[in-house]
Amino acid sequence: MLESFGKLVGTLDGIVWGPFVLIPLLFIVGVFLTFGLRFQSWRKLPHALAVMWRGRRSHPGHEGELSPFRALMTSLAATIGTGNIVGVATAILMGGPGAVFWMWMTAAFGMATKFCEATLAVKYREVTPDGKFVGGPMYYIKNGLGPNWKWLATLFAVFGMVASFGIGNMTQANAITANIVKLASGYDITLSPWTVAIVLLVLAGIVLIGGVKRIGAVAGTLVPVMALIYVFGGLIILFIHADKVVDAFALIFSSAFSGHAAVGGFTGATLAAAIRFGVARGLFSNEAGLGSAPIAHATAIVENPVKQGLLGMLDPFLDTLVVCTISALVILVSGQWMAPGITEAGAGTLTAQSFSFTMGAFGSWLVTIGLVLFAFSTILGWCVYGERCVIYLFGHRASLPFRTIFTLIVPVGAMAELTLVWDLADLFNGLMAIPNLVALLLLSPVVFKLAKDYFDDREGSGKSA
Image (cartoon, rainbow, N blue to C red; front, side, top):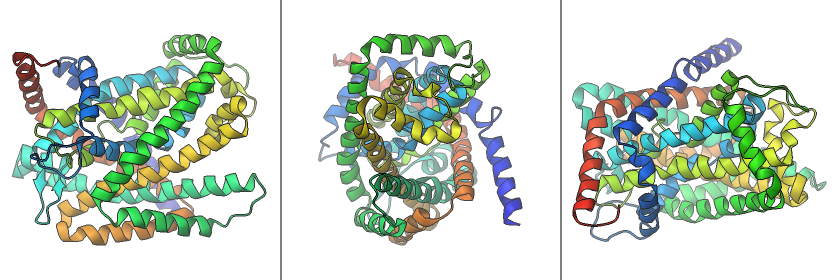
């Protein structure tokens, strides 16, 4: 019976994430919102970066729980994860170098989607009796669309709660354990998975039980540090292979519209495959439209929803256009994607192999540590997402019990066989997006007006925008 259930989940997962449901819907919504915002999600990028820099400190007279910067880092904690390392490798192996271009497209249009999500999250957020600022799709559906749509808000909250235990907890804990045990074995050190699981339980518990402010504080330090270390390591490799970087970009653009023939160990990819895997992996990486990130942005101490919307649009920019691009270029300039024997199953090691090709053992260490830290930060971010969904469903008193249960599930994920859990996680992660995308389309006029008023006011007052 379990086998039949697993097949059913796999079938549903394939439908939801297939080429006819979520992938085109996410892309279409992103394009629509980009045009509706008059390309402000691209034109205002320098202003957004300036807002991020100033957002390191919050104004004491404004409402919220986290500084705008820490709210962004909490969102990025869940967004920057294994997709930036393994997801990029999978996209290249299955869709060819051209898949990277289509990853860029999902980020470019996803910036508008996340702008709208974060803006709506702050505008329609609520304050619980114990002072928590809660928001996200369930709240902007309920408060923005009215009581007749509460069923849709509840649906999102249920999907988000379930997804948090899968994609945001068990699968990440399992990836951390597997990578640490594998790294130790490479030095002839026998490390029990139980040891890793217990240490992980303690570390996660120290952070998670402290609530969103402690999570925000840790994310505000961990995310920039881990991303900068990974990006810096990648830039060193690109500097060493500077003569190949232009060719790598040329390969990405040429393959994006023609596919790529078989070469070396690479079996070849059609144009359709480049688009499919590029868009799918890009969306998996930056989560634009899934509705998870606005839950974190709703906690920001900010006076105008549009300001946090500007930080929200930096999610796909930093995650995909920066971190994922570094991974992709390192893989391409190293040439390891064409090595004999490399298949989709080897995507998890391709990035590490590409880094170690130039940097030796240090490159493998860098990628492994990156994977571990990225996965741990994802646990932190998704705890906030799951907690807010639970608060919406059961009230603010359910907050601490949820965080306790979420923490205790970490070692279970570290030790479990997760094939079915992965499929369930992907399914519910995808199902979250459908209520959110409906709300974004229906509430888009609200965001367009808020953005217009904000930028008109800045231009009228003579401030640079």
